Image (cartoon, rainbow, N blue to C red; front, side, top):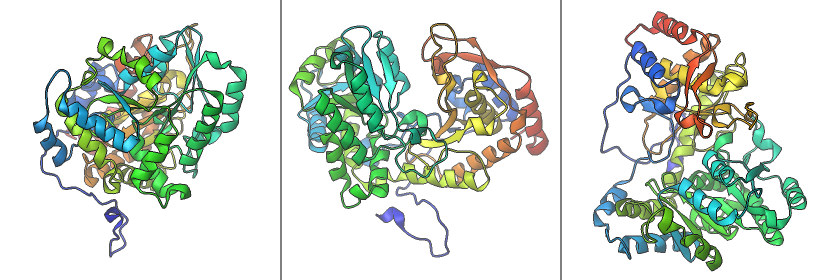
Length: 484
């Protein structure tokens, strides 16, 4: 593990296991430009234009840096509409790594979720169990007039903890779940590796095996969302005694043994753009494959560019390299440690995907009905030109009676796209978080002015409940000047 080299003078820093060969110019902009940009975006960081952003930490989806081998592979793509050799190459790689016979391509992860919902949710009122929901996964289920029940262990909802696997499912809750619902009313059980909405927290292989055993005893398909599997592999290897003596390939094989269906977004897993569904069960393959040409494309491209498929094949193989998959978690952990040193409230232990600020402790004066995580995201952009993503009540949907469904956590996610940011850029981010934390009492809440009924965090627009953004701007100018 060459990433674990020690510094002679005692520094404790993550080491980049790559060199940068292509660069893209960035722009910080002035405080007044940032304030104007967030107002135009309706205080929704999703609606900011990239030209107004210095560091884009919105997501790691589709924005990870490709390797030189991935870029070169794109030039050899076979662009046949049907029967492409590029597809066969990708299919063979997935069979090698996942040990599944069947692969169905889709244009990204949420397309896989759509296909699974259409296949397994046969009538209204069915239920899908999960360790924890993801926004689009749940939305596809809700659109089928079905519902989700979350069975994450209580430790998963603790904002500060030293538990290494907060994404684990509570096995007692799982057994009770199967007691309360007839098997014919359960569509499937979904386990998300690297639970996105509670801080990118991993699932242990031991827990996954227990969940698999229960599901197989009950006759319910176990579906694994492997989009964040790269991070989860790192945590299994470094935190779980069960996996300490295994290679990354061996851990991957053990994960896949637990599943009936594996789906993934290659915008995360494989550092390309696309996705797919893998299974070793022909009955599931046959049931899903008729939907692929209707919603995605033919069975050998599924809405993906063949160039991206070539890059995905290489990227999946590179995911088996510890020096590649360690980069995200180790840089995130370093950022979390720097913030803990200055008492900024963050989710611990550091998970995958990104650093997560705990908005309820950062901004305790803002009620959840005024979207503290969304307000923190807007305020942090004003102070830094860094874009993060709200993961809280704003990412929920209202109840049928119009009341808010308050989220378990209010997080500002600062995603860490792989092999994109330098250490100095991370230190800049920490510095601006530090300044904002010192001035946190200036930040106020938000209210909707344009509110979609579903996935409102993507396209909804808000406004401040007071003139707090102007006061924050004035405080910034007082400390930094107007040109920063």
